[in-house]
Image (tube, rainbow, N blue to C red):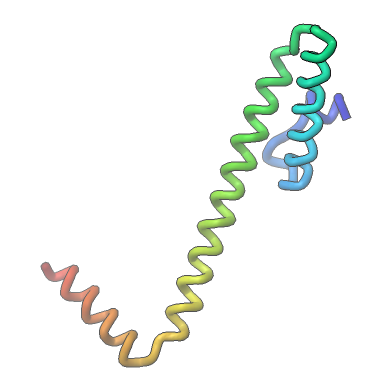
Length: 95
């Protein structure tokens, strides 16, 4: 697991792998600290990279879900609601 943590490829990893590597890295950092051994720089660097990648992927998933919900809601609108929405948008564009 240590070699995988040291040499991970953030783009090639699945979110589950990133979470597992994050957990391992935090455990590793904690053990270095518990043993009063200086934490290698790669540990913090990799944990930061992993955390940023997890955050970015989760933000992408949330945005995709928002688009999906908006699309579904749009499909549920009646013909009159769609017409009103388009008229409102047209008025805003003309202003």
